[in-house]
Image (cartoon, rainbow, N blue to C red; front, top):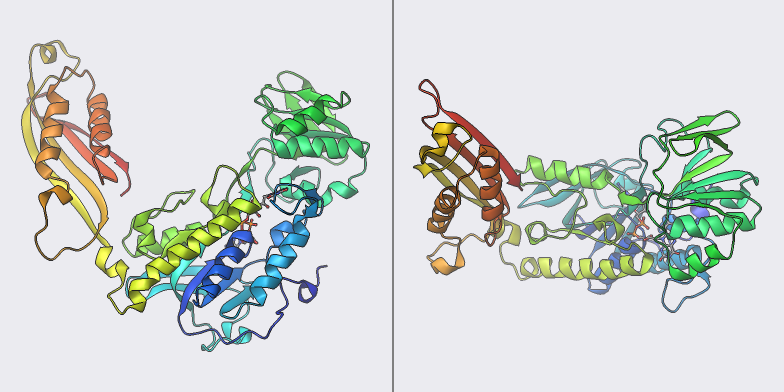
Amino acid sequence: MIDADALPGSKPDLPQAPLPAILDAAIIGGGPAGCSAASWLAQLGLSVAVIERGPRLCGSLQALTYDQDWLLGQPGESLAAVGDRYASHVRALPGAHVLVHRSTRHLDWQPELGWQIHLDGETLAATGADLPERQPLRARALVLATGFTPRHPAPLYPAGPRHGRVMDAIELTASRDNLPPGRLLLLGGGDNAIENALFLQARGHDVTIWSRSDWRAQTHLLQQLDARPGIRRRPAQALPTAVTPQADGVQVSSKAYGDEAFDHVAVLLGYEPEPSAWLLVSDALQRAGVTAPSQPFRDEPRFGVLGLFVAGDASGRQHPCVQTALGDGVVAAKQVEAFLRPLREAQPPLALRRNNRQVIHITGLRFGANLGVLDFEREGPQPIQVDAEVNLGAQTIVSRDADIGHVLDYRRVRLIIIDECTAEHTDLLEALLGKLCTRLMKLPGVVGVRIKVTKLEIFPDCQVAISAECGQW
Ligand SMILES: Cc1cc2nc3c(=O)[nH]c(=O)nc-3n(C[C@H](O)[C@H](O)[C@H](O)COP(=O)(O)OP(=O)(O)OC[C@H]3O[C@@H](n4cnc5c(N)ncnc54)[C@H](O)[C@@H]3O)c2cc1C
């Protein structure tokens, strides 16, 4: 049982000041990215709260007790020790509030109010907040720094209660020092799989490593693998069709090897951004009438104007590591500062000035097009009607005339539709819709397209239309 109060990231180094009624920024997730963002925000003189659902800051690094050499300037030091220092640093920053063991239950966003964060667990009053019990935390900006979670592909990582026989990367890291030597299967071909293969074989395990593609690990790991012939290798092999935990082991079934028995299986097939907070954000934005971000949620200007930013592994970056997470935290803090600057200068909030979604509508556009697979359709053009909506996303509200060169000219949209439909004969309506979507989506500033093409005279008694939607709506 972990004594949360005894952990460096969970126990305040200094007494925390009461939370202000409105924070400049709230950060969901207290890993390296969240800590880095908090540190910069506090040093920029902004008020910030880090909301961490675990018992301590940088808890994700606690199991990483081995010597690492990815972090520049800190070779041979464990990430667990590095994480302790990040946590203590953030704890000591005036202006930074640390709320551990807190989950976000619900989020709201409104242009005038910013973000409202409803927390589970102990009430804010218990944290010294200067707020009535159960009142949501309010923040002008929100940073998602919720990290990633291992992928659990269904046939390989059976759902349900954990039994310890089939593990993901985090479960393996937590237990690998104490696993009794036995037959061990590692599914994966990246750094994590190879490093574990080397580590576990050195501890007396009979290791098989199995990857659907060729090995993708760092050269020095592959050289070490080459020097260990005892590790069975199955590169570029279709993965098992079933992994079935049993009382005394795991049955692994595959086309290439039939049924095999292992003592343990580790599924090391990558990670995906942790979805919990992103789902709450999406829900809040949908309710506010704003098109929600897709997962992985990357920085986009249309969310920046709402005071919404992302940092670290949560952004689904190509190479997740502590160093990139720290850098992301700095970038997010600077983005928050830039977002808040107009507010501080008493201007209307950017969100108010820019949450004006604009859509160009072209309705009832009729002309002849060479379209269709029927004989008579090949003889010449037939009348069609095109209805289109072109989503330009959030725009700055302009209350006086501006140069036409600064906006997307709807005459151009109309001409592109006619040109695309008449340039050549197209057999299928579906293909014509695809061509139109592709061409319109390439226009500057366009984030989504809805299009409907109607054959007006294909039948004497009805019209036929197909519509398509792509991009963001
Ligand atoms: C087995 C393993 C080995 C690794 N080895 C290395 C290495 O040697 N060197 C290296 O640089 N990197 C390594 N990494 C990667 C490194 O740990 C991550 O890239 C880094 O921690 C990312 O930081 P982050 O802040 O983006 O996310 P995380 O460290 O994952 O932090 C996210 C935090 O958000 C919290 N959270 C999530 N959802 C919510 C929510 N809804 N509400 C509140 N809190 C929430 C989580 O509890 C967590 O504390 C390793 C990772 C693993 C899994």
